[in-house]
Length: 221
Image 1 (cartoon, helix red, strand yellow):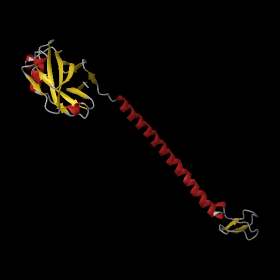
Image 2 (cartoon, helix red, strand yellow):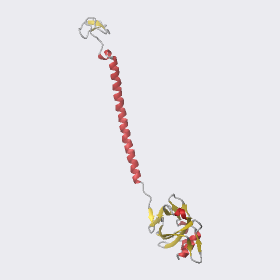
Image 3 (cartoon, rainbow, N blue to C red):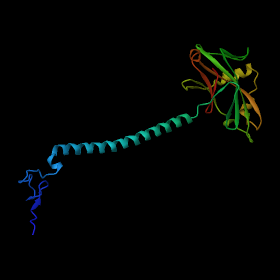
Image 4 (cartoon, rainbow, N blue to C red):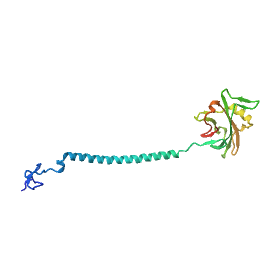
């Protein structure tokens, strides 16, 4: 019966004790390559692990890059799709719910009114006067409380309300009958009115100025 503790030499074939490093007969090293070169084997294992790790990491970077590119493209698309604010010019029709508003004229004045009834701008101030029309384009009357407010607005978004007295004097000066402005505006009817704003003359000389009608803007300067 063969002794299980004996194995043939890898070189000469003679039986030798199992587990010995060298054959006592021919001196051949019986260990495998990895056991004979432990340092090289360890370095090789490290290199293999590094290659595997780099491959996995590279895949993540690629995916991240792809996602980033997609996200940037989506952001650019949203930016391109964002609607630009519409700014109207004097004389253009502005839709305001059931009405159409048209600022027909703008002028800067130091005094408004006629020789009998008038108002002078305060020291350092100026009057910004506008004339506008308002037409009911709906199928039902529009009450005065549904009329949009027209404010003067600067580039910073600061709003200025109209001076009621100056607006009335300017209506007299321009011979505009604005008496219907306090009553319902029936379908298909157009009325004309005025607004006057008193602001700093120095401020008005700088930058752009608008008439704000609801969420729409008409540039007057």
